[in-house]
Image (cartoon, rainbow, N blue to C red):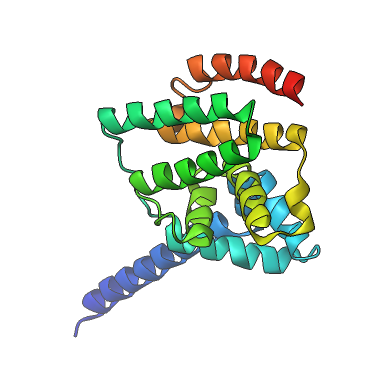
Amino acid sequence: MSTGVIIVLIVIVVGVVAAAAALALRARGATGGSGLKGRFGPEYERTVARHNGDAKAAEQELGARVQEHGSLQEKPLEPAAREQYQARWAAAQERFVDSPREAMSDVDQLLGEVAGARGFPDVQEYEKQFDALSVHHADHVHGYRRVHRVVTTRANGTPESQAGTEEMREAMLEARDLFDDLMNDDNRNGSGHGGSGRHSFGAFNKQAVKGS
């Protein structure tokens, strides 16, 4: 083998190694500390708190979420399904004034179904579904957690089930943000976010406070 060929082979090998190293660093940045903080926002801090301040353990958990769910592609909603989901939200919103806990249960089920329709894990696997949603909708996913917590703690009869009307109203407001996000096929640019649904929810706020 000539010296020229050997040199060419060495250059190729070095190039391949350099490219692999660059890809590894990019992947590490997406799942490393600063990358995770930027991606998950407040959810990053909540996860650290759940791990009693252990940032390394929290980052391992969040990194695992990205590894498992980061490549998920959200499916568009059919127009008929979209209208049905919007009607169900409106019904739950109206129901809240007289039966807030039942309305919370309706919203919990609705969010799970909409997420499933968008391509996230099935509603029957809440933890897995929540993890996937947190990767793609980190800014608004906490509302779903709050609603689900009220519903499940009530079913289990724990002291946390005594959430007040104001607390439930705030959870519904946060959940509405996630619902709006899931309703938008092009949710990355915020198109249509906070439109007529948010306006009508303002009236709900006044009614709910008056009713509390």
